[in-house]
Amino acid sequence: MQAVKTQSQTKRYAKCIEVSKRVRWDIDRDVIRGRSFDFEKKFLPDALSRIGHLEFLNGDERRLVSQIQGRTYANMFRLVERFIGAKILDQSREHSLGDQTAMEALVRLTDEELKHQELFRRLDSMMAKDMPEGYQFVPDPNAVASVVLGKSTWAVLGLICHIEIFVVSHYRQSIDPDTELSSLYKDVFLYHAREEAQHAILDELEWAREDAKLFPEERNRAVDDLIELVGAVDGL
Image (cartoon, rainbow, N blue to C red; front, side):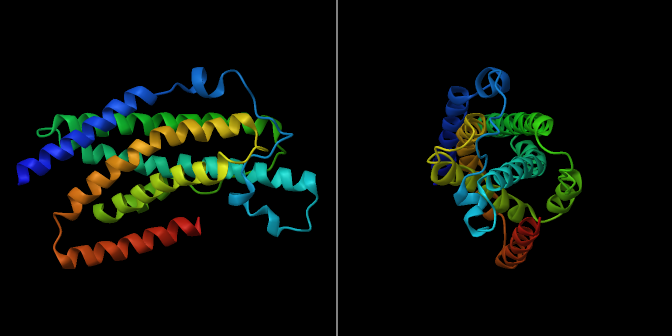
């Protein structure tokens, strides 16, 4: 029974590799394509920015706030991908003398997360050229990563899995349907979601594998860790 389960899991890892190769993109060739941000457009959609609650703002002010929020939204992904890449690289080592398909899938995921960090660094620099001075993204990605990675593996993988899922959910439900966004901003999250969809599958596989190792008392402590992590990320 265990052999059948292992074969099934290996096939899922292999499918993620196949899709990863098919959807893989390049920052300059596919995403930026020589474009700049259209500051006559919003960045973050109303469904995520909740700008409708700020009734005292006029149209230009609402657009600017959506651009500030959109810049921070992108920077938050740059932050979380710092600990995602580090954790998944650790997970890949557990397969180094075992399932080579799983190892390849996780190494590819790590490589893609490094690319995403580079993308979001580039975007922040591009936005800074045309936005008012004074913007600061306060959280230190390395400091946040150190705190997150200090928690149990079960909790960190659970947090990562949920982050990858809401990346895809946000794009499909809020960013894609909004026709009033900067086309470059919209494309960034289209391409981002294409790779994150495969990452969510791999996260779930690794989370389930970790879960199978735990005794009930260990799992209870890990759940407490996850609740604490979610609260900390929400606080950022």
